[in-house]
Image (tube, rainbow, N blue to C red):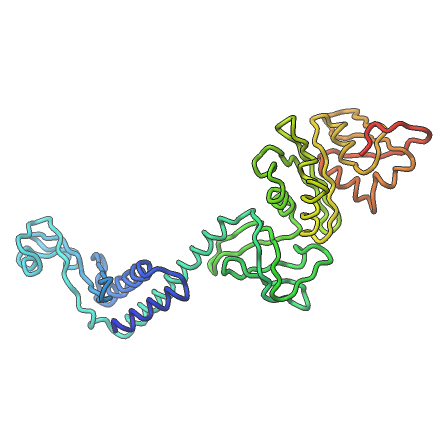
Length: 354
């Protein structure tokens, strides 16, 4: 039996990555629970120990020494206690050994079930802690399978299988089994069946983390991302500013010859990225957010309403609005302002040229 137990523990260590100490603790807990039921001990304290060298299991019923025994499950007379421990006094505790062979078949099955359940719970807890440490971060996942009907992709993250739904994939992208893809972990939820991981490639958090990875000035806090507006697979606008007057926030994000931003564009499958300089002046910020359009004027009738009218040259109107209103829509989301765009007919000198 000890050899079988030893082999089982070694197998669990290898396959599940659970230490022998943890397994021994779970086994002792399961044996204690089963022994309490098998021996009919309701209130008594059952102690189970395992020799780490031989894997010998011992069970004891811990009792308090007393002159007047009222509860045999928890108390023992001084005379009986002397059989197990010499020189005991009233109030001491004595561990009375119980025979393992007296555990019945049902109890043995209960032990096996409890051990499996404890190990499963330990695995779930470990997976949850590991995944929780990656929450709101980018991970590289391996594609295990792709549902040909729904388009959902099953991926592996830290030895845990999770689902990347079709709706959270960038429009137009396709995956093949064995591909490695960068995914943003939106949340990790603890359930009775183990941790559930919510994944996305459309979340703005993916863009934020990619810029942190590619732009050292953002990672060290010199350049700050103020806001992001994104329509995944098509266009993203990101507003940045610098805490150091000598560092160009926009230039830092673009990189030499566009190396930094182009690396991010490639990882997003060609998604266009507009990098905007953030300004505390709403008019200047709104004008920049409508890039690449030229702006004649930004009128703010009432700052409290966060609503403005933007005038653009007649020939720039379609550029300012964008395809199906995308440019104006993203600018509004980036700035948090409602933007009404109107054309200027005649010669106009742009207020902002980007």
